[in-house]
Length: 88
Image (cartoon, rainbow, N blue to C red; front, top):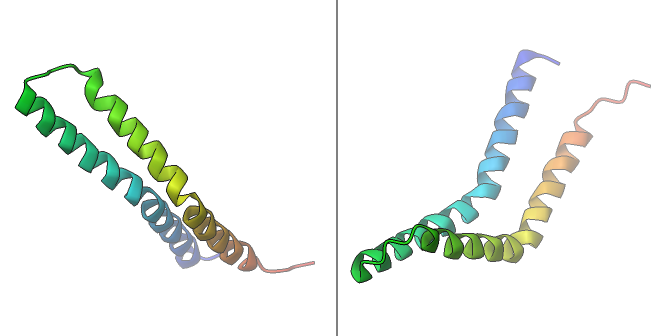
C-alpha cells in the first residue's frame, strides 16, 4: 500500500464519520439552543434541564436515521473490502 492510498483511506474514513455524525450533532445544537432560549426567558437555571431534552432528541434522531446510517456503513465497508487485493 502506498502512502497516497493510506491517506485516501484515512480521508474517506473521516468523511464517513463526519457524514454519519452530522445529523445528530445538528439536532443537539438546535435543541440545546432552544432549551437555552427557554431557560433565558423563564430564568430557570437548572443545569440538568439542558441535558435531558438533548439526549432524548439525539436518541430519537439516531433511531430515525438508523436505516440510512446502516446503508452508508454497508456501502463504505463493501467498497473498503472490495479494494483489498486477492493475493492467494
